[in-house]
Image: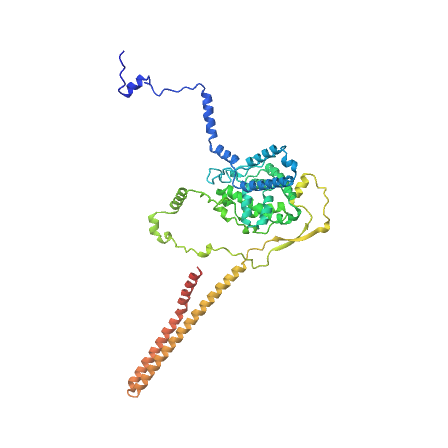
Length: 513
């Protein structure tokens, strides 16, 4: 049998292998099943699925503190139990129950074994402005998560750290701040204020407020009586800061909305809910949250809101819109198109000094206050549960408090008055130096003139004894020159103060800047 020759080129090779038409079409027995599988793979590998899976299964960094505290408490319990049984011989030598303890220890170790932790990046493509965020709806048995998967516990820890509390106080109060009721207060108060301020929804707001009153009543009852006063003196302010920090962290692109007025309104609302009092005006000025504008609660730098290309494009567009290159207009009126040089004053960057108005002050009003009454949230909780029949405090415990009825109209502050007095004193000093300089120059000039006149008179007297007629003519010329010089001197002294004043004013302005 004759051996077949090997193929000499690619065409012969494909024909030999019966691949003259290649690649051939692929046929699947069940196209629908294949399409479903591909769609499922795409869905499982999407950003939202990966993000949600990581959030639900990977613990956050702040969990380490809570886990460690729980572990220490359980170890303490086990140690106490072991110490109480150590002298009971039957328990020691008996095998009964040992297997159960071993299983319990294995369960304990499996619950708290070390896991890998990740920190979710601030640059992930999540919603960063108010407009793109919506409330998902009130759920009776479940808290609505904060935007961008923010953790309420981490926010509270950030606020407590900013307060620089004493270590013992921080350890004691951290348990109350991170309690279930306090966490629920932060979640529901944030969403209530979000709806109230930006996207009103009365039904959801009413449901949130009901649960806010429940959470606050629970928190109030959980605090020991000896610590209630101290804790609730700082809690309204800390809750307000936590809500404000959540807004800044969740919506960095809308940070311009969270101005001083926003903080004032938010604080007034929270303080009135919890205590029935409005805080002092400008209470937020002692907050230490300015770094949140540029950094996150984790300490990492925030990504710029706009890219450099976008900012350059906007700048070029603004310049092109504002510049007119019509040469005829420029030639007709060149002064109108010159760019004035603006001197930047260093004092604009200085911090404004707080000072009171130089006026009669605010108007006050006396109001009746019941020292034994409940806060608005507690009162609402009692009414909601039909517990209004609780015995009330007698009227004799009611006292009169003073509140600010009307703030004073804007007027110069003491700082402004002192500043203006210093300016006036500086001007007076400059006027004095100017006048002193003018008088010294005039005295110097008069002395020189007197010396010259005396010298000339001595010369004329000596000449008069020898040539009286020539001396007479010289004396007339001397008198004429004196009158002419006196006129020039008068004109010079008249022009001297105005020029000196102009120079002094310029120097004063330069020193002030």
